[in-house]
Amino acid sequence: MKRILVTGALGQLGSELGPFLRERYGGDNVVATDLRDEGGAKARRGGPFYRLDCRSGREVAAIIRRHRVDTIYHLAALLSATGEANPQAAWDVNVGGLYAVLEVARETGCAVFTPSSIAAFGPNTPKDFTPQDTIQRPTSIYGVSKVTGELLCDYYHHKYGVDTRGVRYPGIISHVTPPGGGTTDYAVEIYHAAIRERRYTCFLAGDTYLDMIYMPDALEAAVTLMEANPVRLRHRNAFNLSAMSFCPEDVAAYIRRYIPEFEIAYQVDPVRQALANSWPNNLEDYAARVEWGWDPRYDLDAMTRDMLGQLQRKES
Image (cartoon, rainbow, N blue to C red; front, top):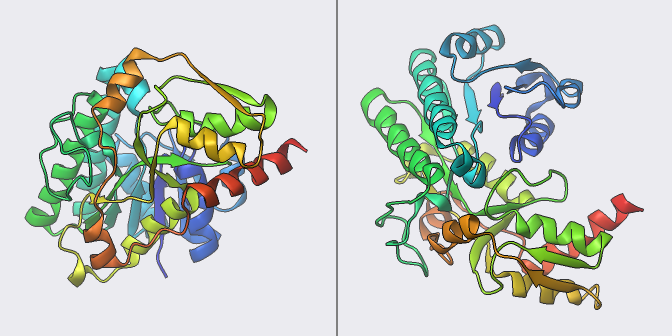
């Protein structure tokens, strides 16, 4: 039975991955941590919770030893739009936090899962069927921090034998957690607006294609990768993941299948549009499918149907 530490457990991914892991491995075997304490009461109900600054290796190590942790899901990070507003903080949290966690993993023998992102690619990257191994050169501090993280994880694996693994997540869509300051947030906001107001004003242009993934598939990917046979993993850190690629006009069209009167308008945010334009339209994820069996369940129609149904029940 694994004993797991989750950093960033109150964030967009962590707030759902923590309960998912507790259901799978048992509440007492999953320690949730976050720099914030707001919302910590919910995390405490299912198992241990600590307020933790992951940049403090001493504090991370103390929790690991106290709970005999063997696996770390390191999720603490500032996202793309938030990072551009404060690049110094983004570097400090995203890179400094990961470095501290990897050092503790080196000392304690823990395995480490670290998510990367499509933001790790840049305007010179092939935009369609982006290869697993290709030029990256991102233009955002978030992307730069993610490329740095990929390389750091590779280094700690090859130099010290740390069992590091990770995926490049596309935009993550969830009916549970609110948007967290990312460029792909529109794909969450649009469903809330469709239920509440029957219209949405989008901050990206209508023909902006980006890769996306529904949260149930994102959670399953993280756990499946960490449970995979290490002998099969050639690309350990930053596997491309692809589930669906669409633009705002596509989402609106699928929403109209269920809410015919839905309308979409546009007020483009130049900062987030520039970030989106620098990222791939869709990723080639053959390595993930072959090396550890990646197989998403949700396409745009299945996700739209589930999102609208879940949100409608909450509103009711």
